[in-house]
Image (tube, rainbow, N blue to C red):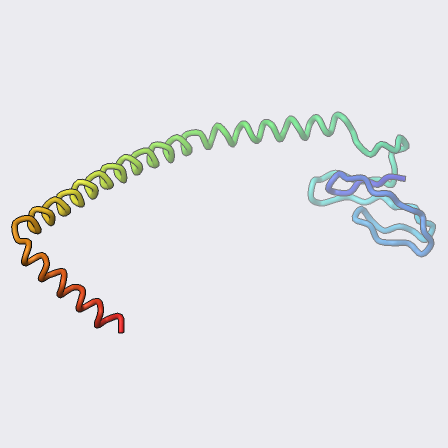
Length: 141
């Protein structure tokens, strides 16, 4: 005997003595399920339908159609938000690319200035390198 629960999954009642508690109601001592109602979906379950299949093609079709309509409605509502977010991401990407180019140019200028300074003042460059080396040696001890 099949019983439909609130999640629309069939459960089998085994007819054991002593009874057990199911999600659609309690079973009697003979193991036969009593009918009950579910508060989640508003469907009422019964102890059996006589066919033993436990699924109703029309109900499944209605639920599927409702789900499709809900998904379509949500997609229509989200489309402007997704497009706005896409535009904001594109704007942020352009700004970051521009800033990265500026940093690259600034780094290239600093390197070129450093090379020019070393070429113009080679002894000062060697002295600075020696001093930096000594500081690093002191700090690493």
